[in-house]
Length: 427
Image (cartoon, rainbow, N blue to C red; front, side, top):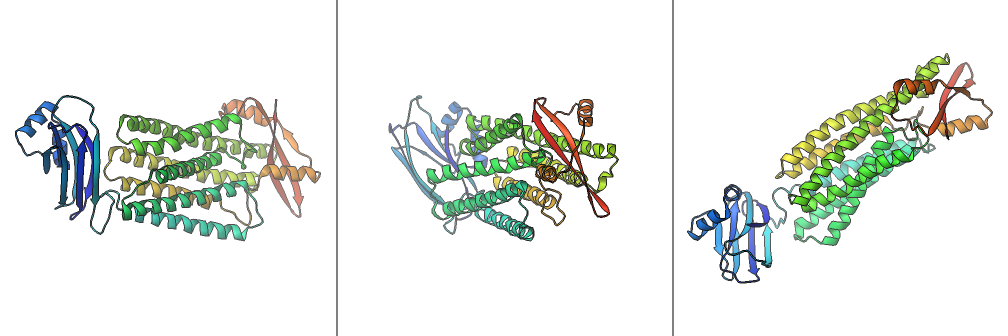
């Protein structure tokens, strides 16, 4: 039994079908079945199914023998999904089929029932992401003198996500109007979507690892841990859409599930590690007799606490939506809209948390450290960090890196400005 296509028809939808086989066999049957009929047929063994067909038992809406080809043209009387099958009741052999068919819903709509919402769905979310870009650019306009790498990365994520959604809108709109799917467009779109996914999850992990906030740079090991699993997800996700329920698609789905959970675990652990690093810096300030609550370090600690909460709720929602997506294969637009909402909410939370402000605490502290050294300030070094890290068995510390914490104290007027930096040198 060979199921060569399925399509969701609205009431009044129309189909035109023409099939030719290569051997002109008289033992081939063409079946056009409703969803309930298809489920019943799947439960039958081939011999039992062929016996019922040869006995002219009514199993499907349309069932014809090849003689020597098949033609069908009809209008759907009610809304529902139709399954189109070929059953070989003769001897097993290689057969080549030539298909020529058109499925169309009312108003010249060439999308299947579960795909009809896609054009409007992607248009709405592309507009929402464009609104985010607008407000993000206004915020940056008020602080145009600031040049922070983290915000440059977040801006890049915004534009890549919005462009991806616009491309998806034009792709599904074109299919809706023409019914034509060109492979070169599918491959190009899948490549860009994979790139967009890669940038999105990379930005989340870079923030979680404290890039430009608690660390001057990431180690090679951290780069590998970030790049490889995200690349696997970006590629596997697009390939799974192609192979779907074949054994290759099921294997890719399994790989996706494992890699997703690994990345979510890494995301949460990396955020915790960054919080531990900031906690140590606050302890170091207290050890130096400095009130830490008014320092940039404390402000960054509060930012990462908010980021951790955002990641925690994102993981919960992501797992729930992903689980629904695995169990529900029919209404994929519902899963798609849920995932788009989750991504949008997460980015709004991150953007609001790390937005540029007048009293900004996200300057690259390592650039600040260099500025202090150039102005003649002397660092106060402490070995307290090594003892702290040994006591807590901090997994984020690369044993090849020796880290010394540095506190800069600068008297300005009646107040004291305290900044904390790091100095890293390879052993």
